[in-house]
Length: 445
Image 1 (cartoon, helix red, strand yellow):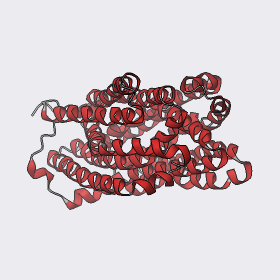
Image 2 (cartoon, one colour):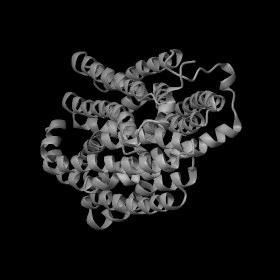
Image 3 (cartoon, one colour):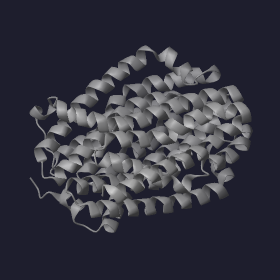
Image 4 (tube, one colour):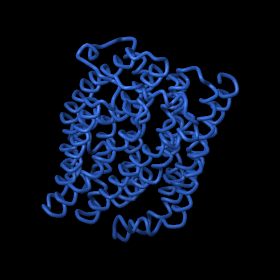
């Protein structure tokens, strides 16, 4: 085995280490977000604005199933980071083996159920009227590739837990670049419409999966598993499930949010309002890439140093991560406030969508400068293996605040009430997270 390079997580200066971890994560998320963004632009211009709404309807279902892989990946990555910090390679290997087994079992089961109830799920998620048929076409094909997507998401988090952010970045870039190339070929050149968009997504993640297999087979990885590691270890599975449930719950809430938003907006403004949310949702994924990159970079640093008992480095990583995250979020906020009309015009030339989206986007991004506190705070508890506070803080933003707000405010204010719910939820969840994080750093660390 090569020298354990994960030890750098416990020795290098935090400021240098955080940039070193966060930059590749940010680039990977940027390319992945650009993929989603450009994919939406291609679909909107080459197929039509209804296609944007159709993809937005399918996202909750595919996101939730793919989130199983992400949840298992992050839950296991927390254990692996702390095990490597404590020099317990046996536990790290067993955890990785269990991740593979449980990812396959759960995602294949979910795909079967997802296909069995296709006609019920699509209308439930807002796929009504003219949106239903293109959504059904896209849904069926994308669902075939979900197990591969889930394994890729799981493997990516394990790579990052080993302290190998550059390889994790490449794993995110491959499906993004592949999807854009295939989009052009299948939609624009071969004129395959929604089928082309769906196959482009599925095939691109198959390419990512092969790269991740290569990584773990090569000498770059410290985790060399064999068949014995695939057997279920119940204590590890229990810990991994508790920590992974945090991520799964967050993604489940995202799916519920899409369900509510698509239905509420369809009732308030029809297909065009669903398209408005489709564009804003893509911008949220794209614009917040550096904040999410800092959060991803922070996780293995905090987990490794907590496992090694080096609490001063954990405190320093929290402070710097929040500083970096809020700094880049402020820049994002400034750009969105100044150029929303120009941003929206890239997606579609539909006059109604062009008229309604810019102001809605301004409200949605209004509290973005402080969002880093909420993301880093909830990520900290997940990194150190405290599942309950991580779970509760993760749900504050969308579960405890946004969903109740979006069910209540629009009944009084109409569609503007939908957009106002975003900044109110952001402010309230940040205040709650800041309190718990302040108490943690003053007492436990």
